[in-house]
Image (tube, rainbow, N blue to C red):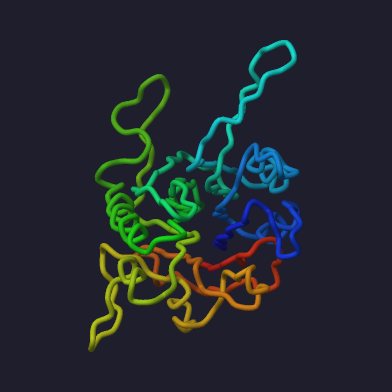
Length: 287
């Protein structure tokens, strides 16, 4: 199974052009796709409904969308009636196989005063994969504040690990033809975490390295597919700084798996050639 995460920056490429077609082409070969910064009804953009347009371009994939930001974009027609629209900003999951259920998990936040700050979230999708149901998450963490990212991580990880106990979208007996949602133990987490693999926030996800044993698998922490595939922790760039001419970048985008999937990580790589965003598509493969 091939997985990819891509923060598409609402389709704004390194050349300043907005082009969803090249976004779709960059991820088309993946089985499961996690996208971030997907928007609806932003007047300045050529595609007013990006989730629907991406769904058209990737017509062999099922898809779900979870807006973290949802604002009024209504207007009135000449006869005075309201044209209902919402300006939305959020995450998307696409899959070659049916998406049995989804939930949009909004993360804790604190009002940012002197910088731009929006609601962060994680979109949960339970996929009917050939080997059995698999949970997948598309995540976008706070871009401006390390303290808030730590709070988001400490809130989100227990939610994810708690799904087998607490349930997913629906639990209990069937009602109106709706049965219980699968709640598989193993899951995959992809997205723009807005953090580097340094001691500040990264160990909250993968655990602290022991002075003697290094990193060991723990049931309440995740495994970075990048290092599990043999790549060095301090190599790889997934985001480039536009203000510095896209010449300098950091590794901010990740694919994580539960310890039960760690042995299945076959490879992980970054698409260094994609130019459709200020981020690069971040891939991994499970056998």
